[in-house]
Each structure stands twice: as structure tokens, then as C-alpha cells.
Length: 240
Image 1 (cartoon, rainbow, N blue to C red):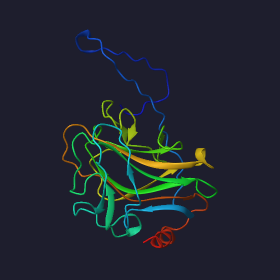
Image 2: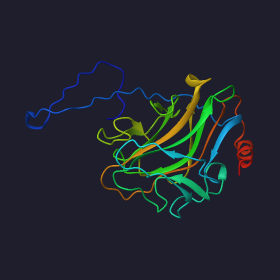
Image 3: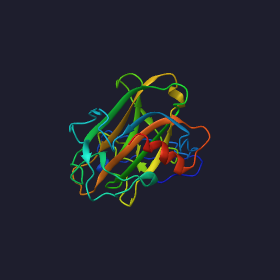
Image 4: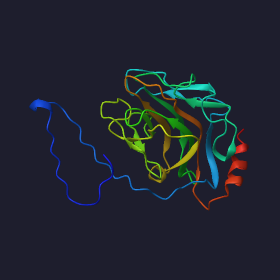
């Protein structure tokens, strides 16, 4: 449901024809936070425009190998954040759509979060079936045994369907209206001093014809004094 005003609410759960079944109740506080990007400096960079950056699959359901790396399909925007030309991408389908019942995470790292490494910035584009399909960003500090949901500064779009093995019932990037790449930033300060990996989790239900999730780069750096976009573009060009 949509966000509710502060107050006291009562919830009644009533199944169809009084049948008994399991249910999930999820409540999230998704208040927008201050952006920690554009980055003032970069300490780790995964540039999928130039390589697959050694990503590995971390299954979160029955279908593995949803994520692929390679030449960007012609159905997505040709330029991305800071007008960078899109050549290659990490994505959920190089053919221009993702498979039904997708359930897979792309995992990069590990990296040490030392001084100047407190903010994650992701340049990405997504078009998915709203609510039912989508993706979210996670972090592990124990080699994938447990994962923490990272929330973008501006928040996710909606909470995914509860029976989706990768995204439900958690907030996720989902929706059908995107026309261009965007950047999102994530605060990493709770894990400073730890060695972490980043995971891009994607899930879908049984039928789809949408484009999917496309990631051009992910960068970790300092959220110090913001730099002009043109300057940050020059910094990123050093990795291309």
C-alpha cells in the first residue's frame, strides 16, 4: 500500500472463505535521506561498461544465471549518467528482457571500507512489471552468509510481492515508466572498517515482457564536498 500518515492503525487479516494459511506482514520506514553522491573521490569502482568485473551469481531462488554481462541491447538508452555512452552492461537479459520466474543476484567484491569509502553510487536503468518484478541492492559482511538491504537515499519504489523469492516482501526498484539511466546513492557508514560485497538482487513472477535491470557502474567513495557533475564525469572517465 501507499505510505500512511503517522498514527495508530489496526490490521485485520481475513482469508478467502475463512481458510487458514500463512501470511506475511511487512512494515517499513522508507523516509528519504540525504544523498551521499555525487562522490568527491572514488576508492572502488566496478565499471561494467568495460568488463564484467568478475561478478558471480548468488542464487536467491530456483533460477540461476539471470544476470549477464555483454553488449548493451539496442532497446535501452544509448547514453547514461553524465552522458557516458553505453557500450556494455551488467543486466538481467542481454536479449532485451528478463526470464520468467527470475531469481538471481549479481555479486561483486569483496572490498575493504576504509576511510573515504562510506558511500555507494549506482548508475542504472530498469523497466519491470510494477510490484511483481524488480530489484534491490544488498550488502554482506560475512561472505554471503547474511545480507543487509541497502536503501537508496530517495527510497525504493514499492514493496515487492511476498511470494517473489528474491524481492518479496521488501522494498525494491520496480516500475514501467523509466526512459533514462539514473544514479542512486546508498549510505555505507554502518559497515566502515569491514570487508564487504555488494549484491544486486532481482526477481520476477511467472510472466513478463519488460526490459529488466541494467547497471552501468557501481562506485564506492567519499561523500565529502560534492563535486560538479562535469568533474565527476571526468573522474569516471579515468576508469574507461
